[in-house]
Image (cartoon, rainbow, N blue to C red; front, side, top):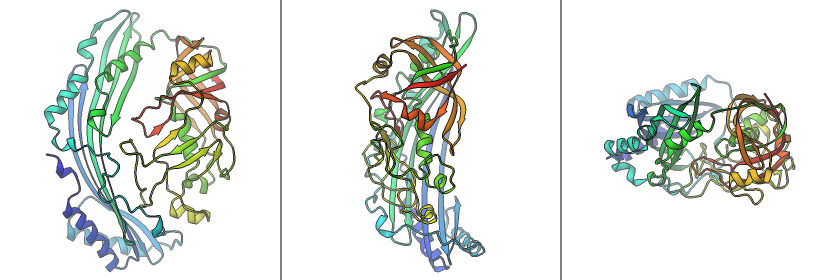
Length: 451
């Protein structure tokens, strides 16, 4: 049984004691986060179990507000006398720091009051507690494709298959001196493979596939290795294309590469430091009118959902970009104070980009676009958070009349995120539920592509 992976009443009582002890020692305000996690992993290599891992971790983080000063400390030694000495020394350390008037706990009315058990969002699989080592091994071994695909196929040979099955449970509790009690408990099951194939000329091509789910019954493990192998085989025979402007379709598996920098640019630290290309963007239409992106943190059973952020502030469903208009920044209490702005939550939680157009699948979107380049992966590159300029290596396929013609690799796409999103053609409706960002396959017109 794995119930010991969850926070015990004794551990919760210890966290409460630490909060009160800090108050007694002179801390005006206190926030404590107690977390515990357990992870099991089975590594696979070319048909055999290559490694196993079992890791249990506990930690207590304490944030102290003392005489207008602030400090954050953590310890993984959770025993009463040791923690008392640790807290006393931490308070003495904070007293030596310079005052920071912007360091505050959130206003009490903003705090979450609904996360009392940690299981309100149905992200914890009760079956985890009885999952045996033998069952884990059976899943891992059954997921391999090595024995089914080994040997020379038509034009290619599978020469390496590396995979991992893992499961974990995470349990955290956040308390503060205003009475906050917010708990979050979740399980996660993951499977991933990387396959390498050799073509008839001895050239090697590699690709991957993976899946994850909060509940074991929803984990798509059976065809994961085959999918990784198929994606590798599809890369055989790459050819270069001439540099120029192309319509570009970006697969849902990697589409977050083009949205994450936009979300980061709406983050408080970047905005406050003027290191964001979306400074002063609130309330402005900087994106196409058909683009709407929502934060949906409260949907039961969805990966990445949470009832509260690290400050204990209650999350809520809200638009991030609505009909092209920037609707919110992500400002924690500290950054909001420095910016003299209203605080929100500190970060995005479960992003969903609403589909644009009538295409449901990637193939339908490619047919709509006609000719262009399908991007199935990014290989390195960078972006400038202050300007929004980017340059990314890509791999994928040239397509004509909606159909792949040949693979392409070692090419670059360059541009600016505002211009890129301004040239959005449409999307499919195929976001992967295993991702915390629900971003479907995207299509953009006239993107700079170079060899």
